[in-house]
Figure 1 (cartoon, rainbow, N blue to C red):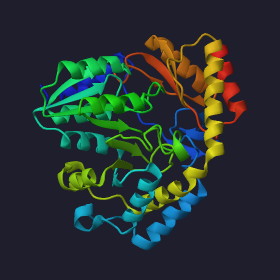
Figure 2: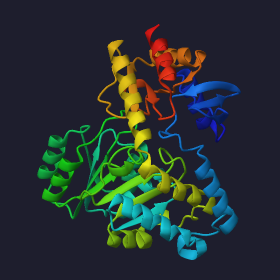
Figure 3: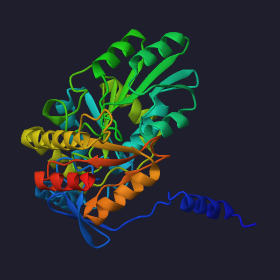
Figure 4: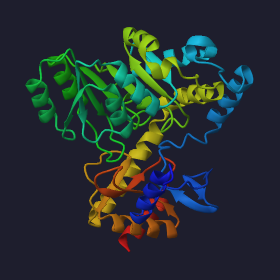
Length: 377
């Protein structure tokens, strides 16, 4: 037997289930389009919700910062990688988020898998929404303490679990403000009340709300008593990286105790430049946010009128819940043949197979109507 037989077996298993993932060559194009393996398509799979990823101001600021600081930060922030531009960006975002402080991380996945374990010990209890992102799930696994999963957005269930389990040194509630695969929202105000009543730490992932929802597009937790908010710059903000918004004391603790921060080389200056430009632009992009929500509402209603199930979506993320894997694959292939990139999402990523449609302010009504016609036929 070969020591790599397990690899062959797993790839064969995935082939049999049509779950063998492959990389495709993508080249971004204007107007919410892209080249996929050399073919132009309208992109309904991107998280570039405001169309900022190709914005000239982000590209220009990235170029300016790279000229000023070089191409790499060269070390972790605790060594020599904390370029002086970090401080200004973190203070700018803290003001926009109405929090005491912000700490920049390299990615949302890195933040979740490292911040969550740093907040608990072996005598702690984690309570996590059933549909939380894989990065949160991995963070819970790495935490190594007791965990309980509450039914999706069922805060009665969460409250019951907390009442039934009072004997823990720390309790940590994990949720998303906008869920990445379903496009629905959590009840932030009630979560705050529950966390306060049970003396629990409330941790909210705002990856898909940042830039899109809340005051100046800064998320659903702005101005609210949420202990820790994680968000990303890689979606509506059009750049890369992540942030943790919190009290100054929590920021200080993470700088000292979060391994994912302590031992990671800092982001390069070009990325920080793009983030800086996005933070200047996004607060005033009210028209783009309105267009985005109008696009989402139009498409969601059109799909529902055709008899499709879009779940509890209320945002720019619209799942078309087809249930059957083969039907989902067939629909994705049909859409691609018609020139639309709409990625199928299936188990084990989600429990129910679906086409996950992601809207952008850059989409035209004509593009959305043309997409709808493919679902009609």
